[in-house]
Image (cartoon, rainbow, N blue to C red):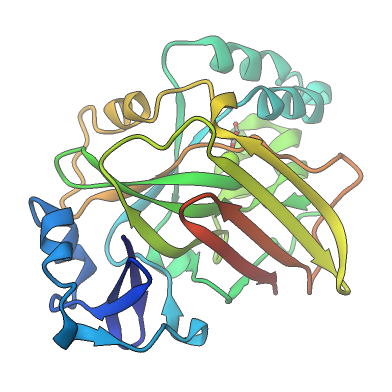
Length: 275
Ligand code: DO4
Ligand code: MG
């Protein structure tokens, strides 16, 4: 079951058919106990509607905060050690990769998030920018993972590499995050064989492509959530990006007009263009 937020309200896709959801607020829906059962009860003939027009899709977020975890894959650790070695920051990344406590950072609220088929941005003062394709947890107020979506943690590598303390500037700015296309409603963990892939198109040619499976992720998503919810409340739930295992080679930087396509098995494809 995938839940979409559209300009025509919330829509459920279940077994190949789309249904209008009675509840119009995602904030309220994420608080429903027994959400899968409630959504299944929406799958009735009188609520069946035409397939979703992709142009009507919105980012699946209302008043949730978006957080992110970092250095959860070996590839991210190695790339960050390399980019920050002149700043003496390399050791931090190795330490956080091995530490019990994960790296968690604030990423966005809704107005900084790009929805499906809309534009993400690179910072005007950055010279080295990359997308980070990340499995994203949808967590309710009680701290239970109720679903999964696709996230793009846009990052300014030169700013973060100059000094790890610049991380919030490298990571948080308008349209620095994309979410979508919908939320896979699922209360079991995603299978370790789940593939995350990313293709970046420039002038209709592939400028970069790669894929990885969740088996490469070092952290258990439930432990990431447990740390995030320690001494912190999220009254309407939150999104938590789980880190990237795909980083383009050092010579690559995003350009205006690039198209970023991120796919995760069972969820779909999130497509954005760079503004
Ligand atoms: O440590 C900096 C950020 C790491 C990150 O965003 C990632 O690994 O995905
Ligand atoms: Mg990231």
